[in-house]
Image (cartoon, rainbow, N blue to C red):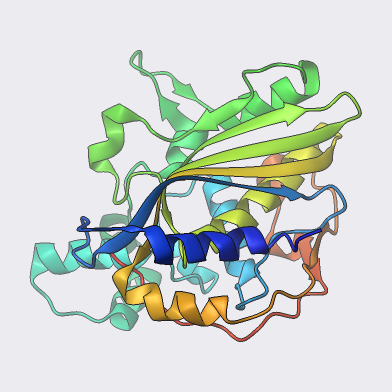
Length: 298
């Protein structure tokens, strides 16, 4: 059987060889293809954390826990040493004030001053807001995660077990419109929970590796809360791209040989979906190649 990570490496090679060279909103430029899929059997705890470079899996899971908790402000992330969302509010602050502040000082102010954090650390109604507090036209808020869990427990054969974040009415208020935008779930007759995630826009070098880890962590939490076992993780994407300043890094990663994938384990069974913490997750057997550094395009 081919190594599961070959799906990712083959996709890297495909984008490098056949990607359409395009301008994009960041001004960096991309090589882009349209339409891609990958499938992973996660039923025995194997998790698709890439081994051809180090993926900081704790950071990815902390981000997912922030989403699940309904977070939209970077301050709780910074308190956990997670810096992956700072670029967008920092850029907004620089535009609004004209101050040439560096990231370290901006983050220091967010952490030190709750009022500054409320004003400048906010990302708008991004993922967590839509997942947990989607506001309908009548003003009612909808907790999509709670509804999903209730359906998993009471009607596991339903074909309506999904949540998404593409709230058209609030897109203009978001620091970044949702990339991983739809999650759909499927229960087998023997009690396995399958998860399909659709990603409209995929930064293949930096985004996909994090998104895969976060999604499987979410799948594990939901399965545990619903009394199920994990099954398959299916990933589908629309615009899959490499930024032009990531091409050398992609070629370097392609020169490496995948190693055995690690296993993810939940160390306790919290009473509810909102009670998980990073210390509840353990990854065993992760022996990756060295990290590959690349800049985020904002």
